[in-house]
Image 1 (cartoon, rainbow, N blue to C red):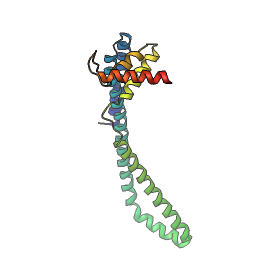
Image 2 (image 1 turned 90 degrees about the vertical axis):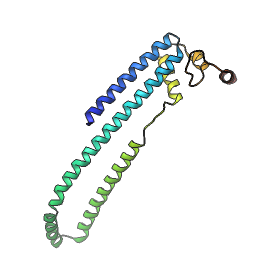
Image 3 (image 1 turned 180 degrees about the vertical axis):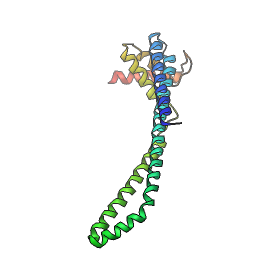
Length: 187
């Protein structure tokens, strides 16, 4: 894959996420909160997939840059013999402390670049998410409902978390609902 191909995949995933959000809106308009929850999970998963594709494109681009840098450095090392001869001449005519300071600064900058590149690669590779958090699903449903002026808060609070079928409820979820109502009344 090239970075451009990965970026296209990211755009497609973002488009799919928007389509799933439209399905959430339609399901909410039909008062079908459970289907809206499923579509919201799909939308968030597609959004995360798009972000992962973008991260991968960035990593491919970073690798290409490193390869280009390596090729450039190979050319630089060929000229090192010539540079050392020139440095010998410079040493005979210049202050030794200044030459040493310049060389130390150059080495420090190269080391800093390597550290920054390593940290960036590590953080990108560890930033993958495999599950869709329930809070994100509920947040997306509420956001779409608010954008479209739909009333779903009562229906959303009646659904148990992770319910997979319409009408699925238990004594525990009813107790949770009552606890939430009581807490709302106290506030």
